[in-house]
Length: 403
Image (cartoon, rainbow, N blue to C red; front, side, top):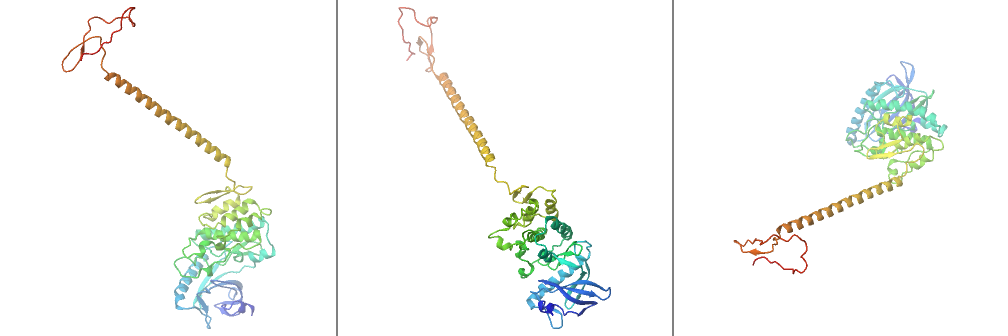
């Protein structure tokens, strides 16, 4: 059959898995296969997810799942434990926008999740039918998905594989986040082929690296990639290729005639290559979409301001020139003060030196008699003349100290 040829590792169709009859393959990825099953007890359709990482395990002839070699065995078992833990966690959720896990069990050397089956189509199929839908329609899809994703993050889990095919639209239009097969799988020091857990274009840069710092911002990147696909009509470029030539801002700018500037800027913010510049949480990102937050992308190394009606504002050269002029004016005033202070100090020093010189100068007297110890004692024979100039007919006489 088509499904058997397309999914060679899938279980045989129409075979029984406990009380579930497998009718078809709904999809397959790097971590497993999802089947459409019929619950023979409750008589309803269910979706069954099987853990089968294609790079670590294969299907044996007896339908069991076995590691490809002894080197892969440890990683396979580690991933299996995480898959079971994920199933237990998701089973506790009852969120209208998260796929519900009703049961999990182990069989065939692996593990299975049994989930509600919903009729509808994936966002990938929807965008083929309705290319570049309007902003209102996209927000009706995205906002409920954000609510579900926030609940997952608050429980300590990441999806790690958000893409158009993993956003499901029910027949009534309500969105559902599905396929958590990659959730938490790249946590820890596990030597896995990272290419098997990334979807090029939707996976952030940190997901390509073994020691990449992943968090809610990683899922935000992926969901931003989904929105990029919706508003531009093309898949987002691979994160690694963007490091050399990033065409994302230009592509989003080309969509301004169809979408609001704030909406496009929020997408661009979520698609920042540097995870430290992206929104740190769904709540922070949602604020920009809702219009309650200012148009600013918070770069942890600074602030990247974004205006509502255009691109990032150009540098204010006039303000820069005014700043330089003010600084120059204060520098000149400071220089004047320093020069004035130096001149005042020099002048004061000169006055002080002249005063000291006058104090040290010997006194001048009209007649002198010898004294003791080399000290000259001046003795006047008569009071000095009062007039400041000699009377007429007198002769000026030089008076010298005693030798």
